[in-house]
Amino acid sequence: MEAYAYGGREFPSLPVTDIPPLPEAALYALSVARRPGVSAGEVARALGSDEGIALRLLAIANSAYFATTQRITTLPHCVAWLGLDFVSSALVALGLDRLATDTASLDRRAFWQHNMAVATCCELLARRVSDLAPGEAYLVGLCHDLGKLVLAVTDGEAYGRCVDRAARTGASLFDVETETLGLDHALVGASAMREWNQSPELVFVVLNHHEEDIMRPDNKLLDVLMFAQGVCGTMLEDPGSPAAQLAEARRTAAMRHLHLDEESAAQVARETEESLEKLQSAVLCLAG
Image 1 (cartoon, rainbow, N blue to C red):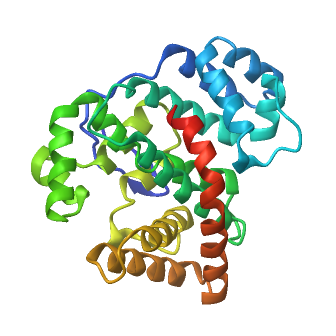
Image 2 (cartoon, rainbow, N blue to C red):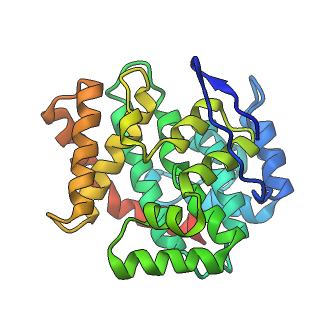
């Protein structure tokens, strides 16, 4: 892939060539969902071409996380309730996840639990940050680690060795990927996002979500993702461990770039933690 520019900066070449195509039905529904001025009914008709994805979207809409007051039984109602931003990101996620149903090298339930927790934190923070759309922030959180799923699909045996080594030694999976495979899930995920015609900004954020030095005040979406990774990492890692220390460093740096005070940051963290139990039902729907 040749380099291309975004926001006055040129992306490096993303030389990953074996990105799996999304299922045709998911790609079709995604193309319809991106049309300007598209209606919920039009997207619903496109979703009807793949019963499996349609049923999982309905299950997500009726999960405890979305707290519906009445059961959603039709696709137009489902699309209207979830919103086009969520439906578009879910189509990418569900389409790729379908390819990984037989993959043993990645715990898909834990994978989606992490991604949805980060996405929730991104959305909660975006509501407090000017010039950021909560739906866009949620999409970034949901998709930031999709490169792990791509690696599990394209070379499950080699990726399984990476996961095992990281778990056995306590090393960062990101570092083990680089040492073992010569690339990492951020590069692979960004390549996939570009292959699937996602926005250049999303590609940029996915590509750099492990690059601490690239965090800048002029890229709020990346800072929001870094903050969310820090919050969720702090919740999940053992206190005092290197991973927990890195998570805290990310959270603190992002707060500084976003001019976020400690009280607001703590409130976002509390709301994210309160959402985790409800997230379980949505995770079960997404991971199948």
